[in-house]
Length: 216
Image 1 (tube, rainbow, N blue to C red):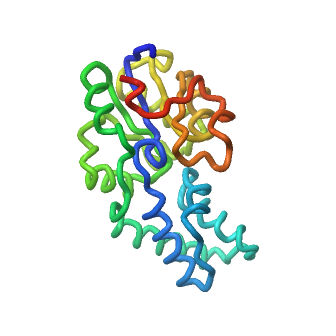
Image 2: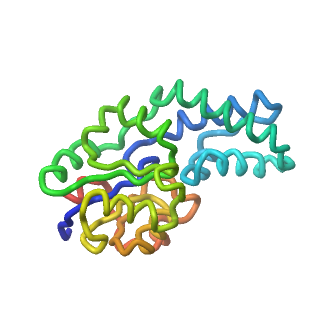
């Protein structure tokens, strides 16, 4: 593959399989508020758009009415509290991630661009001993805008001092592809992540890669 000055990585579903722990937090907040729990397969379809959206999709799947603002806030807070305390009970980097980051980091700048909030992102990267691989980590509350807006990727590029055209965005969803396109970055996707039910080949990436080691 072509080489780039920088590589930006989505987190959930690209670097780390976080679905088991996300499901744990989701089911706690659902059960404690009188809703049915969901399975991991469903959880994987809802990852990537932030906590509030994941809870919203879980409730919609059950045919439940939208909760009152107070209940929605309570569910959101309960999820955050539980998930933060169990951030890496079962979450693990995908095969090849550590090796690829070690190799790429010798020749390029690396960053994370995620829709996770900083409160959850930093502890996850620390718990999995990945934080030291990245020069910049852009979360949903870093610039106050979620992917697929270009802002998070542009902020990462500016922080690294690289041009978007010389930056490769690596993700697993249409959200990542749209963010990269809007920012002017090339983009590749992995087929094993959280694509929201869209076949990976239909995400619109420049290329699919089986593993991050394909970038080395």
